[in-house]
Image 1 (cartoon, rainbow, N blue to C red):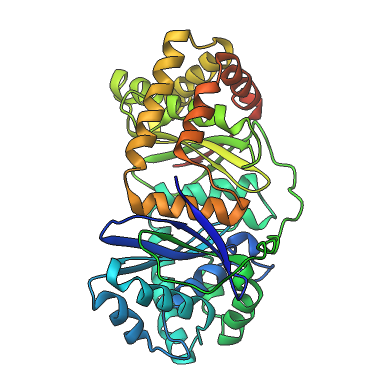
Image 2: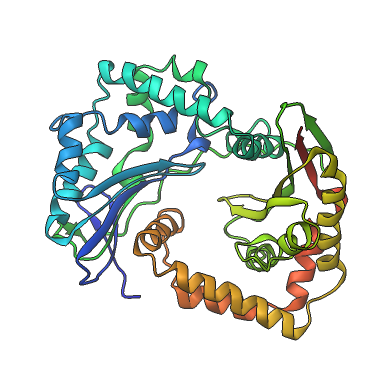
Amino acid sequence: MDYKTYTLENGLRVVHLPSEAPVVYCGIAVRAGTRNEAPGEEGLAHFCEHLSFKGTARRSAMRIINDIEGVGGELNAFTNKEDTVYYCAIGARYVRRAVDVLMDIVFSSQFPEAEIEKEREVVCDEIESYEDSPAELIYDEFENLLFEGHPLGHNILGTAERVRQYTQADALRFTRQWYRPENCVLFISGKAPALPTKPTEPTEPTPSRCGRFSRFSRGSVITRQRSTHQAHVMIGTRAYAATDERRWALYLLNNILGGPGMNSRLNLSLRERHGLVYTVESSMVSYADTGLWSVYFGCDPGDIDRCRRLVGRELDRLASQPLSPTRLTAAKRQLQGQLAIASDSREQFALDFAKNYLHTGTLRSLTDIMAHIDRLTADDLQQVAQDLFAPEQLTTLIYT
């Protein structure tokens, strides 16, 4: 990958992947998310994301929309635990306009009071809709169990009660602290406009709020009464940070267990062989200083214990029996094929390399990722399975 990286005069880091494609994917990634919220600011990072589209010193909310959509482009944003990303897809001839709009909404939003009043109800509706979906809500509550008392455990959306209290001053305070050029990355996949650069090295991003992680109840089972037709179950534990080399073994293990393939072990066991679930999946996430691994399934309330035993059986197999050379090779080949297909989505690929550069200051090519996977051994996978998958390591959350 022929990435180009440099720094603008204002300190904004830029990563550019040149392409002659007719569509450009570009955006600004801000190193500020849920974990940057101080106590009492829960949901503020997400609220600021919404408000950033509501008017700047140079553009009204309607003009922001029309400047991009009026030429067939798409403008979007999302907030997660460690960053907020504003991005668009647009025809190559309009990339200068797209970059100007992105810079405007990220660095010059005014957060008009009238727009805040309207948008807070939009966000509150989003929160209430989310709370009506137990299959999504359980992920947030589970993460809060594992990171209780730490900003990483916060719900990204916050609460409706808290959102209704936020003011223009709150939005300005948060964005002035975190939405600074040196704490952001401008990313472009495609043709790029000429930008004023300087030869100096980019400054280090402002550290996110870290704080200490409290102990959590490994081996515990927590049940919540949600009066849902289907039971929802999460099983998991804290895992590896983005800088921990063991995350590569977990990455492959996770795909073997509950990845998107219909041949994942959990899908074959719980759904195909026993017909107990419609959805079963495992997932992992690596943050700057910690991580999370989990299994989710939804089933009939009467089948919870049976499903948990079947999940435990698959976890125990991986901890007690190393993969044969044939199965290890097949698992690597499947994951590498999935990655190759995923990289064919230029939009998602641009978002991935932007976030990697934002947090690490480095760029990881698909070839590098494939090489990491190739180097994994059966012993690497078994050691991680023994480290994370023992029953006494796992926390379980059940909605019934």
